[in-house]
Image (tube, rainbow, N blue to C red):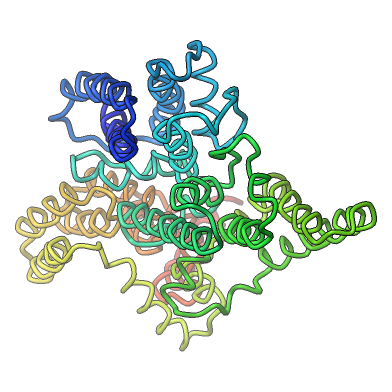
Length: 475
């Protein structure tokens, strides 16, 4: 929690820059808020800074819930300390929580008269809530010796939380952030070219990509009522931002839009189109004006994403790993070998040349039967890359070769927690069950591996060998 607060405190510095640009006196409120938040974070983090820990799932959920409550409180500080607002603590916390949860409800009136730095800060709160400050922090935490996978799973909805876009959770968090940042910059430029001031373009891009509701004007998007291009841009970027980010990542990496007609997009698009035509038709009868029809589109997109698109977007995780796993389960024996090579190549990438070198050295030492050196190299790997599943699996293999079955089991469990689809780790666990004279659990583990990789010869032979013994015990 202390580390997360320290990360969030840095976001309180950007409104100071805005206050300086517009020569406003609010910089003191933001600087004091930064000092309080950063100091609290240091006081909470410093006593435990030397500890290196891998968070459990329940730790991740608990920290995430506590952090959002804590964040709403410290996020309210600028509203309380700013003399131009005169908000009560209750109203300030409400405004902060509304922004961070991208709810968009507000208790502040007279937005057009407020300092630009306050307006910017409100929009920034919503933007941070859209990507999830926890996801941003996860990209930093492993550098300080804290595993971030459980925080990422607690913060991220849908299947994307289990099938990472990249082999390391830090790289996954960075990929999500840069996709989000790229959409924001594109939206901002579009608004600016369509006629918004640069300040309004930044503020409304934050709100649009986060699919929230804050604005820099009391009239919200109605302030730009005469510009249908701006409303059309809003509709477009809300649709794009509401889609599964795994889809964006896949399209970027593959340089292909082939998955855009995918079921999650098609179904969401049909729902939006049907609702828009209905409301747009009614409004065109009552108000035969293009602006009204475009406004109907904006309303429908907002409510469609609030009620339906996130649900559809979470039904599938469109990543390279997911596609390869599906292909592996459906391929014939000859094709499965090619798919397996691709999948293992993906899993073996840590995202760091130094970590990849440690993995290579550990495996070379193991191939030379030097288990001591192998364990040393692979321990250095797991220490510096605690979210790299293949590192734990490789060290488990080294422990097994050294006859250290207890540590081998522990490492296999960690590898499977980070990557539940690692069939090699499941096979290793099954082999240990056989070593422990537990054929029933070994048979179950091999069956689990077979479900992922049906054409694995080792699994097929093991199931054939154990089946008579297990079925005999069952009878």
